[in-house]
Length: 82
Image (cartoon, rainbow, N blue to C red; front, side):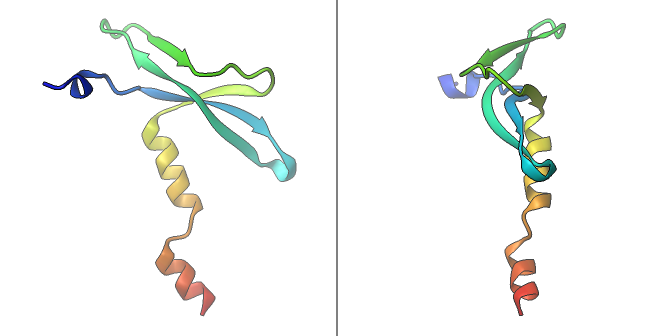
């Protein structure tokens, strides 16, 4: 196997979340969390540490589904603009 296929995928992605105007939150990916071999915990690896706001852990699929829900599909946008 190649080295790349031996790597574990993260269980969670870490995001720095900062509240903005109009009740919007802004997510900036700052790291990931990897499961321990024994299944009893996670190791959190951060690329940066925020000085304000909060860190939120989300599963990678949750974030992708949210982004898909927020962005109208190209077909829906084209129909709406007619």
